[in-house]
Image (cartoon, rainbow, N blue to C red; front, side, top):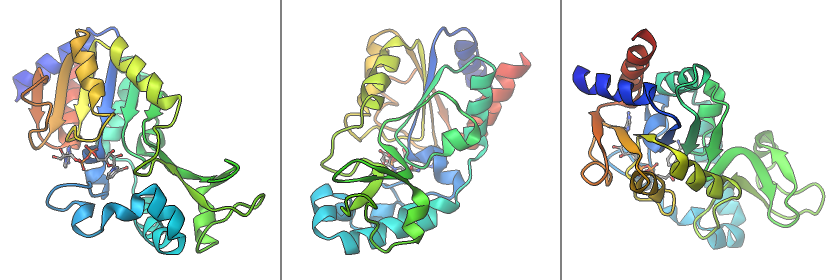
Length: 246
Ligand code: NAD
């Protein structure tokens, strides 16, 4: 493994534009379960409450689950050592951008500055009618949060099933993927469209792909150049020390 860490560190140190592409797995060690897999959220919850038409038709039932999962439970989570190592590597000039599929805001909380949230974020709510924005604290004040200005339903500022990817984050993420010469893919199965295409486009454009995941993903046998099989915190800490010390 140390040889692989060394090779990955070399690639990052010699890169011109290195990006991180993260998924739910990077936040598992912060206490947030992924959607899929053994301990995934979809084993407990029916994902249909995150369908936009279901949410609009049954706001009381949907908001109950949205609050329970994304605010009461996820809200307790703090960035872990993987998020922190990425933020430090950005500060030191080795990582240029983070593209995350996550909506938990943990990259930004860890100190990363250049973050594209491909699926939006839970930190704000947006009015489904007039697009007014509210801090997430409103979820503790109203059972079904409504807009102060037009009284329409508020929803979290992340994409629900059936909604378009927020812009400009979507286009900027693909542009960053095309510009990159090294992509560090962390904790994603690579199953969620269209985000999952970013590492493939990067690879087609000549980028090297480093992947961190305890399990093989859709990328591993297709495009991964260096597979660091393991947990995000351990692998990112080892990579960080190798990059900074050598
Ligand atoms: P996924 O749930 O499909 O897969 C999670 C991946 O993480 C798996 O490949 C798994 O092997 C890996 N993993 C598990 N533990 C890990 C660890 N300690 N370190 C590194 N990797 C680990 O996740 P996905 O591919 O990101 O797709 C799910 C979608 O759901 C995404 O679009 C994401 O926005 C959303 N989601 C977000 C959060 C969050 O914001 N934290 C949580 C759940 C789901």
